[in-house]
Length: 524
Image (cartoon, rainbow, N blue to C red; front, side, top):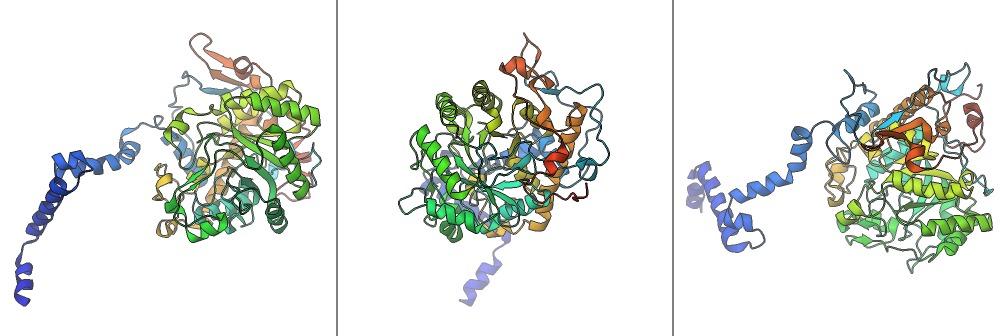
């Protein structure tokens, strides 16, 4: 035995490398049948697959220019990162964006902007922009809710995102007085860290699921009673990444903790049904909304990505007929998506946000229903100029998902569906999650929101307004095409936003239904 070990010890290191490569070559040629390249070009063929696997990173860091990448280019990501870290997020030497490009946004500034008076809420808190409308006010819900921030965290579930990421987001929204939408994965312990919560459920009814896979009203009532952080309830009809298809959570992400929260099996793919069991048509959806509102006392809304609008028209007509309806509507754009989705759905099903929102808002506007509803926009709106456009079109709040993820460390690796997210944000891998410093990342989410609101407010003041709800369609201009060159939103989308009932920022601050715990002192 000693002689054999001595023989092995005498073999040079380079010989071991040759032996290893020989074994790989034999395996490639005679045993593996799956990959033609490695069979035809043993050993060297593996280099091709390795280079292909790091191709996105190579393009992201060395090849793509500042404005080229999708879904978010380097300039957009850098602005979010710098804003979250409270670093310099300015540009020098003028814009490098092609301002004549199709769909470029222009915010029309006033000759003399809005001047903030003394003792105004924004003197002490330059980040204070609450929603101008109160969820549930029109329908006289028992517990109306005014979001304390016009920018909030969109629906991203525990499961799609890691525990550390969810905890960072929730502690972050507490620090900046925003709300946190749970996503359809149920209310986890990580959602209960102090921030306001909108409980969201989809066709899987996770967290409020009966044994037969239907919605349990009893579980929903108990959940709301035991968790006062829940300020509203959202029913997901569809989402931007995969409208018409149920949510997908790969089995590799299903841990024992997740399985217990969701009521599913460990390690098995969770594929939610494409449609709801709790209702099958618009009248039944209306009944469910009213039933949930009656049992919980909370505002109830719906979320959808937009395609055909005939059922939205039916909903609006039924609202006129009955005097009832959802308290808020979240419109998701087809460009959205934080989890797993087939490319055929992510690329082609549902309209982009501007097309979808304008279609739905206009039909509610034509029926005189817009003042009843808080409209929430979702779909790459996490930048001040895009937010100004959204408010000019009729949005009252916006939800951000991927932008919020980037503020806590996401690097746009686009491997959310693999459980190998390198930043620990979209994975259940404990080692990768350990890289997230929750106190630090929650501070960064809060700082991103504060910086966003401050710059959004500055744009609002430059346009001559006190609050973004005062934007209207003619305040925003977009490049259209070679015939029209540039037109305002009213000319492009053929409607004028309904004027929002707004008196003053002070009145919003004094509202008894204001969410969060704003940092202003009541001596104002």
